[in-house]
Image (cartoon, rainbow, N blue to C red; front, side, top):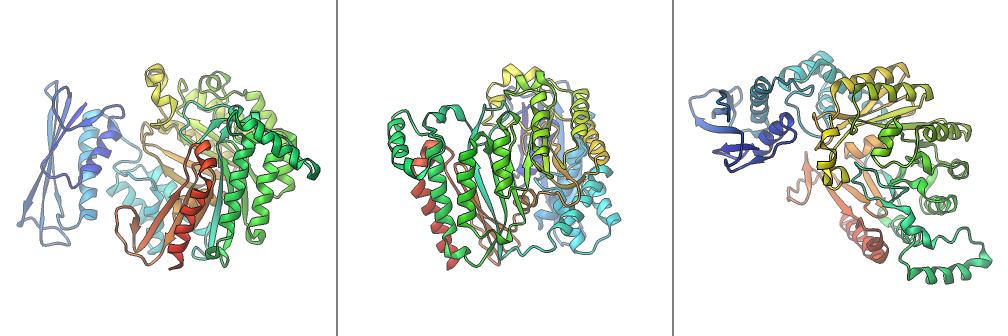
Length: 532
């Protein structure tokens, strides 16, 4: 454990983030007992200190000690009047001290936050040159040149992709299907094994069989809710949301059906959901229609035929790894052979925009395992490749059962991500979005590569937070952008007079079904607020 002692806690979060970047598995605490490292942070105000833009400055002094007698100090000048200007020197100085102590150099340097590309985007908008932006990353944030270059590349790609978007008059649609064949070890998403809800599956029903189907539903209800009950509730929400007058003059531009694993549904259920979307929303302006078919063991020719018939253009087939041993360990009940076959079936069904997901840093895997997975993916030649650095999330079984898997978790490394980049370039895939998550050992990134014209707009739009997202289904989170609204209330995320509000649906499937009217009412209250 690390004891953090500071006389001012104004920069507490920045300091903790840097500590956690170097000490992944250690807690930062406020009591000294039982700790092995002490970091003392002393802020000193001094009117005689000159800083470039202010009249009032001061110092921050870091003192690092450990139980073996190590001790070092470092002081930097800060601007007390401007937190945004002060935090970079603070984080940079602390980074240099911790790097010297641990012998580690982090590819992202002192840069923290979800979207490292935001800096490059803002600089490009201000007309700054690539050399200036690169120097900003490497000199101020202490990143490697490779990270700086990829941020610039992604920022330029995003500018090109979204040049024609009208953020105020367009929106995205998300539909959540919270079922999977099995739950993966690392998963923290809203997901339930579909077998637990299949007892009520009544299959295809013609007009003459509607009454009989309803009778069967009532009979199986005593066993618990079913997938069909969920779809009924979901379709009810879709119809209610689509009927909002607030969005009658706005255009839906992207649809993303995720989960969970949407292809865990049968072909008839997929048809029901998609046909409801197509009848409820104006499809004339849709630029992108994506469905996650993440689990190869959930994919069939019949399901793919339905998706293709109904206008789905992009699907995702996610191996995560091309090691049968690892697949078994992480709870994915499919094989490498099934992944390859599912990809072949999808190509034969006419899909020309297929994404593949992989995870680096999976339990038991090292750089050679990653290279093997990449070599197998390269043979299949997907149209895009999305790469996640393993995040150990609180709600995932991997975290809950950490003692069982701790010795197997080596974490993602920059060497792995460099191997990914090399493979993607060979496939003519270019980076188009990048973000970071908490709880990733090594504090590395998630990154998406795609062929020109095969990028996923939705993936970037959800990160950009510039366009409304209407989200339906259990665990779905709708996002609403209020422009020219400087509200700084703690419940809102506010930057540059843009206020972002979210409306959450409950995650539990049974609760979602039982409280569907409440889920709709939550959105209706937001619609009323938008109309004011």
